[in-house]
Length: 397
Image (cartoon, rainbow, N blue to C red):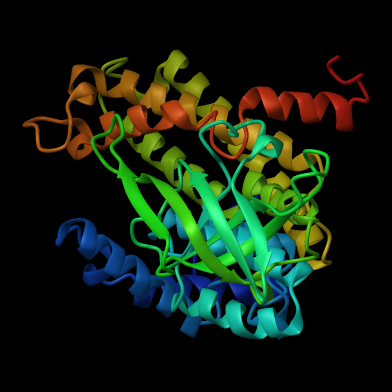
């Protein structure tokens, strides 16, 4: 097995884990999994299959505690896993956000019945989840949400609208926030709900993006009935529960996997003759950019590993999650921009265009990353959190 440099020393257990992951990737990443055939439906089916393979190998959620189907992986083992997945250019599991965000939140806040029901179905991808937090008038200011839920017997009746809901077009379940006490202060009286998207009164409408894809969606609730048993955490205290989810989202172990993979693509592009230089990495301007990106990726790996260790102990990520989110989103944009620079005019061509760089993925990445500094809290919000909670600066008046 290869002895990749992870930037840390490895124990015997770490080396055994590395060998296990490398062996799994060598055998599991077949031509079928790597295929690009079948369009969007084919891609989704391969993502579902890939997650099932990870699950069967005990690798779908290595940071989860063992009693919930994880491996209680150490931060070093999480670094190893991310690095190997990135080096192999492995696809993401279809339930990426549920594994990294919802699962840890259920572990922390759920009842025994909720844990025993939902967690195995997240791992197996029997349930595919999407997140319904943002609303048309409550994006960065999430406490301004207007979706309401009123108690009717043993159900909540939900009315309202969510927007920018990723994956809703193919998910079968949604975790979302609704106001259950309209008389309370904005951050109070909110509850965290789990719902079946097939529930009467829930409608999903895709939103076409600048990339041409419909990755985001609107979700409408029209007197949709959600069982009270589907409230995650205490009723009217969903803000506290949501902060846990947002912390896991902002750190996002899978984000480091994606960014490491993007860095590998940039390194390969930089090593070849490109629009910036015929000298590859011998060109100082190109080499300086790659080295800066690599240093930032390593910093992000270390932050994510620390947050994962906290999560294994049942502690929600703190303000360091905002550092990770800020670095991730701005690094995502910077690398997408540099990829366009390396590709030159061919980088502006879309998928299907003759001569398009990386089959049009350079252009798509550039366009998609315009939104990187908005999702999971804008960069402005993250800077406020860092200023107030890490640096001790006064709140904005």
